[in-house]
Image (tube, rainbow, N blue to C red; front, side, top):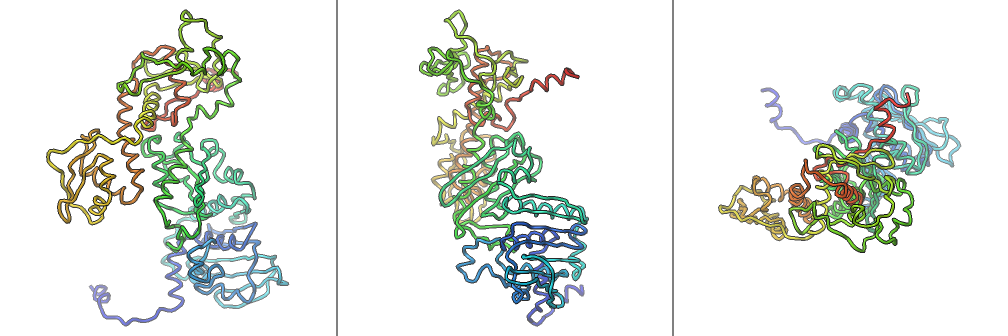
Length: 597
């Protein structure tokens, strides 16, 4: 009760002390030792450092030292460097609107000094020796060090014990510091980084090419199970690597996004990436990726959050579409086709594209009528079927070896579910329904591109109480909603009515469907929302149109399926993200039978 009375009592307005203001600012900037490491390394990079060393004691709680070989700070500017909102990186609103440096707010050193003991030592090329400044006493004294800057931070949160209690164990805080440095290292392969803990080297990344640095930071396994991506739109460039769906993880702990060299967490970009994986990822698995986005500084606002980990794009939908396109393009090529150049030897003259009746002769395509689909418009047409015709039908060239194609040559079917094939690596096992489902799905997507979704009128319109945002979106996106098979219009100032829905989704909750579509249309590009809705319907159609389990296939049909898989985009997963095929190498088969032991 006393606390309530105290809170409601009239208090005079007064200006806060500089120390209290700095401590409030520190609450936004300095969350834990890793925050200090991030801010100090940002400053080192902005100073042009080529080598940065971080030394920690007690996981960074007891001491943090960041040393660099950058330009250094003149001795007369050292006291100014510790003042709030003092910086060399911007000087006008124009500079703020086109920030190209890692830091720019000019508050990190002051905020850190308000919650810890801080000393700053620096030397420029023109100075005969370094100068060291004690932030607490303000004393400036000569020091011995080379050109560059050293910042020493001791006893973090010593002046705010309540905040120190929120820190985790030393091991946990050390892990966060390593993560902070790893993010910098991945973005700046031209800079060497070293992290010492309790006098022992914990991590080191030497200067290297971008490819080598990515392997050093993220590991060889990530490189081997990811695909390179690149997209250049002039004003926007995207590069990096996207993990294959098979390498998806239970946690989102291997997702790195950089905007102009700055590590960020952005829901828009994350949604763009996730939407690219939507029909190749199983369940709630998380993709692994490293994206580097380069965009004109005046097209992105980095002054959104004190820690600079969030950004705001001038044209958010453009970025969303570009990210999705870049990742989709990287994932499109089937894994089997990637190794074709390595696995397949040169074709014999009898099998060359110019050879009469050869496997790659596409002048007389034939239709495999024995494996028809429910949709007559997408018959399972196969060029290679003629090559696998019975010997009695014509004189055949020599049968190609298993090495001729990435997925090899079919040899058997098991349980009416799996196709076995032999290739240069060993044994290939294919889930025929999952594989055929993907093939049919990709054909439907191509054949029905831009087609209107069939709708089902509701006898009684479904009404629901809507927000102002939902009503505005329904009115502004009426045409796009019609393309999605939805007729949603205002019934009153606060009620929306749904009068039709997609016929293929007749069994679902129409109000929930309407709300989710309106929410996506309000935030993301309409074309991507429409495309995703179409794909969900086509996925259902493909599942029903694909060959069923327990269907006995001929060798011709099995081989035709394998060849289609090799040239179909995203053929490594079915529409639900399950794998369509697996490889067992000869070495793995040998191990099963203890051969060579």
